[in-house]
Length: 202
Image (cartoon, rainbow, N blue to C red; front, top):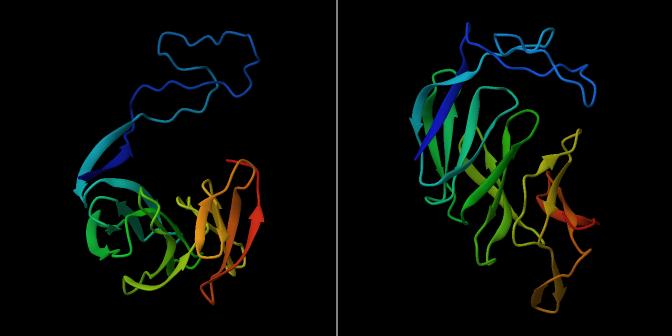
């Protein structure tokens, strides 16, 4: 599996849309195909490829812009890319299950990884120390497919959107019905699920 590195090259033809164009009007694109007065951006080109793990599905750059995490669903690993050298700096195994999505703390010291498998037996958030690449904790969430998470502005809480929430009945977990989706709230210091915010489906 590979990750494509895309860079914009100068001097290429561009096509843009005028921000001031009104509904129903036609833009005069001229011979070059560019809209007069529109901001132009060169079309991106592939600058190179980087070998990563099996079935890469998600990539995100840390807030400090020094590295990026690529989730490899097939190999249950995360590939760490050095954004300066465009090379793999390390591979982090995620034995808990297939990593799906990643978000970071604002200081880039912690990665929050959404982990789940297709049969629903694994559904949690894994904490990773980005300096060492080690898993420092995991928090089970209330759904089968935790989506991309987002940390609060003060860094205290992690919000995890749930599209397939579960209800608890004794030791039994069952999928809840329409209108039962929620957002799990995790305390990032204690690594505990503290509450869930009710939310309409999707």
